[in-house]
Image 1 (tube, rainbow, N blue to C red):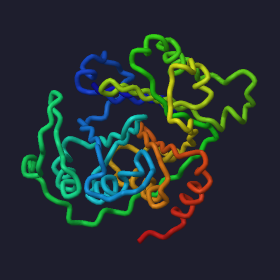
Image 2: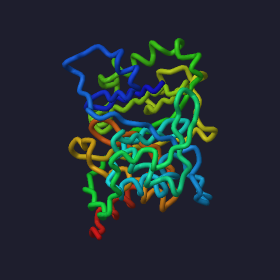
Image 3: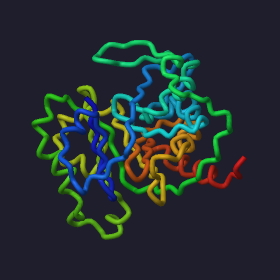
Length: 292
């Protein structure tokens, strides 16, 4: 089962499997992206010899994200505490497999069983893109001052925090008592909860974290804090290719870890707080460089 719910200032983004979608009640307030998407999960980084200690989308930027962008494949990223999911449109599957099969052994999971998939198995009108990928739009970025945590918990303890979770997602948007107006405006609301194949992942800022019992949530042994880079001045849509690549590639070149969460309107990269200054300078420089 696949379920993810992310709150941003603009909306809630829900990503769920077909069974879960059928359980949703029809609503005029529900806007649905028309495509069916397939989640890819990289178990190990193919045949690449990679000594990088970076985590998240950084470790697959060059082997997965960049090649798919070059083949005009739009991706929807969802990083979790445990792993990274690259969602691609079902209609692009043939291109995806052909692009990645030299680097990776690719398997399809059906009912808990894995079977190898080759490009000839899913040709279905496949034509390799022979054109050079268009230069992606360089989108503006916003770096709010919030500090974020990437955490998990034992699924068995979910009932114990259900009320707190609902409150954090749906009833905590009002300004905090004692907060200065400027502080409240600078920080942005971002909360992500996912329950995928029995594993729970939570991304929230330190303000929201204080609402939860500390003994139930766990994070990395370093207790690292993260800062957000929000990508997009206007809603990004789902068709543009290369948005994830233009952020993840420079981070990979500098071996900087990053979690990446796409939503219905904007994209969000989380980088270690200690690296936010260098990331800011890197992205500013990237925006000054002339297109090739």
